[in-house]
Each structure stands twice: as C-alpha cells, then as structure tokens.
Length: 169
Image (cartoon, rainbow, N blue to C red; front, top):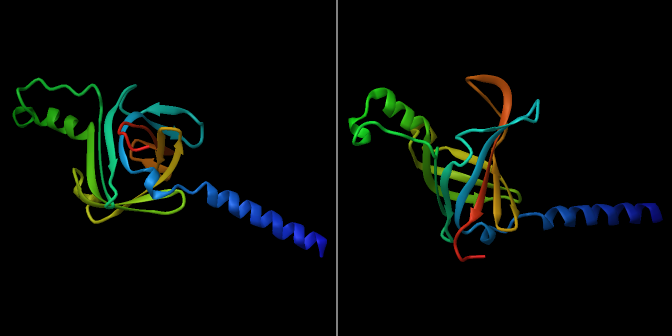
C-alpha cells in the first residue's frame, strides 16, 4: 500500500511539473523580432542558418486571437527600381527569400496552432500550421515538426528564436 501511495504521489508530481511548463496564452501576446532562423539536421545535429546570420522578421499575437508573421532574408537585393520591374529570375528570388502569413491562432500546452487565412504561398490558406513553443526570459523559441525538403532527404527541424520587442511583459 505504501508503494502504491508513493507511486501515485510521483505521478502527481510529474503531471504537475509537466502542467507547470505549459505556456499561458497571455505570455505570447505582443510583437516579437526574429533573432535567428535555423534548420537543425535531426540526424547530425548540424545547424544551418537558413537565410543568413541575421534574418529579419516580426511575429505578432493579439489578445483577440489574431496572429501575423513576416520573415525575410537580410540580404535581399534588387537591380531594378521596383519588384514589378525586376526580371522573372529576380522576382522568383524575392519570393523564395521572404515569407508572410496571417490568421487566427489557438494554443495547446506546448504549441500554438496558426489557422492561416492569407499567405504569400496560397497552398497554406485554410490550413493549420502547428508550432511548438518555449519561452526563455524575453525569448520565444518556435519550431515546427521535422520535415524532409526537396533538396535533402534528411529530416530537418526549423527553429526560430524571437525576442519580445513590445512593453507587454
């Protein structure tokens, strides 16, 4: 009986510890600036800076349940006066080096689900994007599930580190 009681106590403590790690929705409210964006190779542990050392981006969550994200390579260049005057090759490169989407969001214990309503990639519209999240101080670490890309058959996990930039803390 004593062993059963200890076992139940251990289960209770572990369950409580796991629940205490859950992120409260109000903790992600605000605007976050992108610090880094890496692909982490799941087989080798190697990290690859996807869009250079200092990608640019902002991620916003509102109290009303809305979200928006824009991410861009810091070294985007254009030889024409505007994107609509650029060559098709330059336009394609601009498309490949910037991503934006917005919609609503819901949260689970350790993830946020983005319900995409508009995106520069129309295949995302109407779909959900699951993002695993951790908060460490004023940083939000967001990752997706491991994926296999067209250029590499080894699973990689995209990890984005954001820093809170607004006064809501």
